[in-house]
Amino acid sequence: MTPRQGWVALRDTAVAMLVVAALGVPAGAQQGGSAPAADPAPAPKPAPDAASEPKPAPPPAQQAAPDEKPAPPPAQQAAPDEKPAPPPAQQAAPAPKPAPDKPVVGAAPTRAKKKDEPDRIRGRLTRVEGGAIWVQTGDGKTIQLKFSETHTTVFSLTKASYTDVQFGTYVGAVSEKLGDEIYSPIRRDSLSWLHKGYELRIIDEDLRGIALGHQEWDLTATSVMTHGWVDDQEDRVLSIKYGPTDYDETDVEVPRDAPVTKMTRADKNLVKTGARVFVGAKREADGGYAALFIFVGKDGVVPPL
Image (cartoon, rainbow, N blue to C red; front, side, top):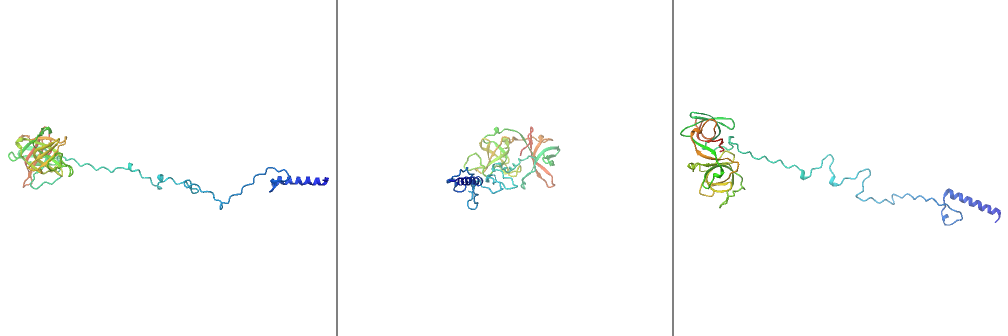
């Protein structure tokens, strides 16, 4: 090689090195070539074509629309501006119906009396004068009645005990049927409805047979009065019998708080101011009242009839 040829080769090598430094290794230069090559910078990857290579969609449970929060689970979802309904266990129970009132002695009767029945007047004697008495009733009214030594019968009521009742004892009771499906615990050939007693009177033997039978009474709207003898007994349930058949009896349960009294014939001297009385009266032609009989409470007893 001549000197001129060596210089030309050196010049070409220097130019090639400047090109590599400026632009990078040309295609095919890494497979050969006499010029020393530096490590080339990695070529940038072309941006993927969104239309031809879509990204995989996220799982359905995690997918959400842009700029929207994921919807809450169905169990927690509630309509806007509405509070979720309380669970059934927390719903308020319907208000209980009020219990029926107990009968009030001295209050206005709740059942109209029959034509031949006497008027029943309950209250306290405020005045006794000659042949007349004045009774103040529970509603505050005062009624004047004629009082006759010969035509007015007086009975006294004193305290007694349920333990005084025996088989065959003559008694009287005001009661009320408990319901069409509530039967007496006393067993017999036919079922009998059970009545709740509001009072029980043990009647003196010399009055046996008085007012025998069963009739409507005005202490409550459905109360009845029964007089008869004790034909059977089951704890505090009495069968009060007033006739020969199984239908001629009333089974009465006497609650422990029901008053039990002893009924006897009494002297008219008990008819005095302050006494608590129950009067059977007849309306006369002039509009006034005549007393037919009077029950007088003794020793603080209030006639519960």
